[in-house]
Length: 321
Image (cartoon, rainbow, N blue to C red; front, side):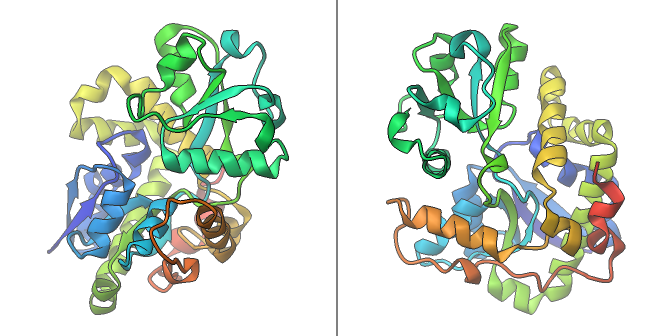
């Protein structure tokens, strides 16, 4: 049995349920792997850990992968697990005054982002819609980082930017109707990816393929049985039991809305679409987030996805809704 480390992007939550299910069901073990999960501190940290070889694998957002590349590191995304960004604009119906359904409704509104990367994606969304100058998109407030929900709750802003299900969390906790505008429905850029180090991948190609096969099985079974996936997550972190409803909603939203695109349906689980990487690179290059040059074509590869594995090749056919 080979022991490998898997650096998560954050503390255990519903978006990570497929990986915990893959471990609980023995999918990694059947591939000869003992996978040690490491709790995360954000996607940039996870991507850098993999790029430095401090972790065999990492779960990290695509924008973080490019950001880490701009710092002179060499992260290598070996699978795209959510083809759409999880970023979303959300609000409460009684604050916004109507159901938020289209970007154009944000004209004349004030929007508070929780993080720099989601602010960048929101700005691109507004630009594409031709309304960037007509929306007051606030700068990220370091004192309310990740806690912009209270600004929506007290009505000091019209909407906030976070990830899908942030609005639902407010709805469940405060019994006020929430609405979400998923940015991934309007902006063709990647969400979460599985990352490793080029040297590790070149020296241990079968380990990478084994890890990806087992992970694809985890995603497939979790998509078909979300309750079991959440049970596996909670067995790792029992304190989430009180949040079972929202953690299941997080995973089901990812499974239903974020993982499938025509590219995935034709090419299989984890397959990278160059256009999505290039679009993301173009978006990030127009900001001051990057510290140096980037090459979106150099941060990903499909070489380690096993085309002979049915769960990879026929993934969408087997589990898409």
